[in-house]
Amino acid sequence: MTELRRTACNRDCPDACSLLVEVSDGRAVRLRGDPADPITQGFLCERTSRFLDRQNDPARLTTPLLREGGVLRPVSWERALDVAAQKLLAIRAESGPASILHYRSGGSLGILKVLADHLFEQFGPVTIKRGDICSGAGDWAQLHDFGELGLNDVFDLEHSATILIWGKNPHVSAVHLLPVLRAARARGARLLGIDPVRTRASELCERFVQPRPGGDFALALGMARVIFERDWVHAQAAERCEGLSEFRALAHTCTLEEWAREADLPATEIETLAELYATKGPANIQVGWGMGRRANGAEVVRALNALCAITGNLGVRGGGVSFDAARSRSFDLDFVRGLEVAPRSFREACLGRDILDARAPPIRAAWITAGNPVAMLPDSLVVKDALERTEFVVVVDTHPTDTTDVADLVLPTLTLLEDSDLLGSYGHHWIRSSEPALEPPGEARHELHILQAFAARLGIPDVLAGSVDDWKRRLLRKLEASGVSLERLRAGELRDPSRPEVLFEGGVVPRGRVALLSAPAAAPPVTDSEWPLTLLAVSTPKAQASQWSVPLSPGPPMCRVHPSAAPGADGEERELQSARGSLRVRVVHDERVRSDVALMEKGGQLRDGRGVNALVGARETDHGGGACYYDERVRLVGTA
Ligand SMILES: Nc1nc2c(c(=O)[nH]1)N[C@H]1C(S)=C(S)[C@@H](COP(=O)(O)OP(=O)(O)OC[C@H]3O[C@@H](n4cnc5c(=O)[nH]c(N)nc54)[C@H](O)[C@@H]3O)O[C@H]1N2
Ligand SMILES: Nc1nc2c(c(=O)[nH]1)N[C@H]1C(S)=C(S)[C@@H](COP(=O)(O)OP(=O)(O)OC[C@H]3O[C@@H](n4cnc5c(=O)[nH]c(N)nc54)[C@H](O)[C@@H]3O)O[C@H]1N2
Ligand code: SF4
Ligand SMILES: [Mo]
Image 1 (cartoon, rainbow, N blue to C red):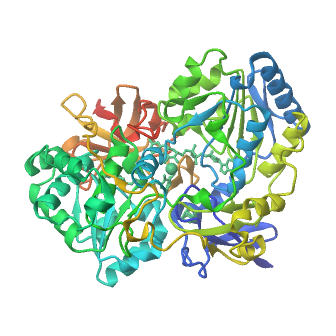
Image 2 (tube, protein in one colour):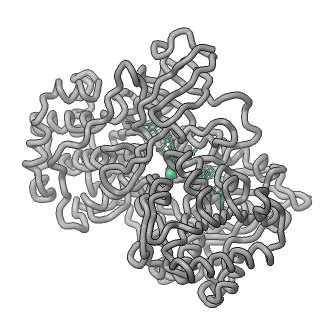
Image 3 (cartoon, protein in one colour):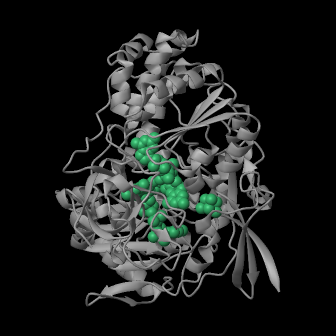
């Protein structure tokens, strides 16, 4: 008999869908999006539609694995956790808690995953990461300019007359934004797209421009210049913004033609974008999270914040600059203090280098959960080397990865269909409870239960005491007064009532006045005849970061380039080289890609011959500790 179970998707995705799982004889036979969920609207993305292949993957981790004689071998949970506790207690006693690194990434966005941070804080505090390779630069920009992170309600787009889709590819990385964008368009809103790659978003857009990678700062400043010159600045801009004249002066440091040249766009195109944005409002900017992943990333996002503020589009229905909904804010996580108490932190973008360079004390142990830093952080080979040199590395995961490949102990945990947790979202204001739809295979365990058994061995059994539901209730405490309870969430998603429909109503921001930028951003790297292409390895429908739908298609990964960038190479294999390394790729000609871009899929692993991050140098963004994923210059060499 088939039974329908309901849960929530915990993947690192702005949508946080409600899933319906058809279960027959204890096995999931079909996954669907819940039609009753206002965001999910009854459909799923490609990668989660195909999740059952990954759920039933024979390679799934089902038992703890301990490295003995160089080989990972199955061991009991007792043995695994005894060894881990003995090692970590000894290392803490000998070298201090700072010699232990705890690293957690976005493998699951379940809020209970933060309990690992809590445990390591109580055991140490230990060394942790600082910055955020995903949204660090953009988050910094929002906090700096407005004093708070957030966005207008996603359905507020129904009030927009103009929507700029700026460096965002909703057909791939935010598919549940599409119905909202389509509805806006059907109602007559004008959509404009800005991306070096002519993505499918162009199908929705009245205009679509392709600036050079990182040229967005120049584009935005060119637009600002036009807005100042034509007097389209909002009447109250001077009251609401700090540094309006400095921003005006910055916009006037170059002529429109010079900004246009830097962005590699026609000046007339910039004028048109400025006119539509400033005079055909209310206008919203949908800012892609990738906009910040470059050396000038925070300043690029600041330039968009400034455009929004000076045109009076902040704090109005249909306006706003939508970057990050601050998903954790709904939950009570104040007991985790993070960098405030950590004895030391490493730059996430440069994690491998910082581990290798650590002295007094060096890093001797690492506990890695919900992350695959070897594949996903820049400079993969350095991250790999750093972890290989670390005496004892524990990785908690569901599947083998580049990072479990260098682990001394691997602990199996639950997939999104087995887990029980709470989910917020970085793209909207709904929260959900995930509930186990399936029994885990073998000995895979809920992460809380792993951590509790470990805490008992570390001599701090009380730190995480309580059932999964106890913790869910505790983390929901902030919302209790507004009627959000675990019971109600189990019945279906709820909108966090504490989030306003329109953020910064009337243009009033928590910091008082909006901080406008006054200094130029770092120029994006210049491609030249030696390094003619900029590598953009971006989200693919086939994977969630390094979690691919299986089986992988055979052969080397695809590298899409404009035909003029590699004439005659269509379908052939080449070496894609950067100053850091090289990768065998299959060249695919694609007219939609700018001629100075090499477009790849993000998430390739070294173990599959697809480790694209081995080519990406480790550098932090201008602010916020992001990673410069999209600044690497590359070239294609060799013949077939
Ligand atoms: N299918 C799928 N969806 C995902 C993910 C995934 O791995 N797979 N990952 C999730 C995660 S972790 C995140 S953070 C989000 C990421 O969400 P985004 O960062 O919005 O998504 P991407 O599709 O990686 O990149 C968006 C677009 O930015 C463009 N871009 C790159 N450089 C520039 C530039 O200089 N200027 C402009 N204007 N555009 C530029 C790229 O060409 C691409 O089309 O997506 C989430 N969604
Ligand atoms: N070149 C390039 N690199 C990028 C990006 C890019 O655009 N270009 N994007 C960056 C971005 S935006 C991000 S967010 C990062 C993502 O980087 P990561 O968060 O490291 O990426 P994932 O592949 O999602 O790795 C998460 C791991 O968690 C595991 N996992 C799944 N569920 C659970 C769970 O419940 N518990 C535990 N313990 N593990 C679980 C998965 O099997 C997977 O191995 O990558 C970054 N790297
Ligand atoms: S990955 Fe995103 S779009 Fe896909 S099912 Fe999960 S939440 Fe929905
Ligand atoms: Mo991300």
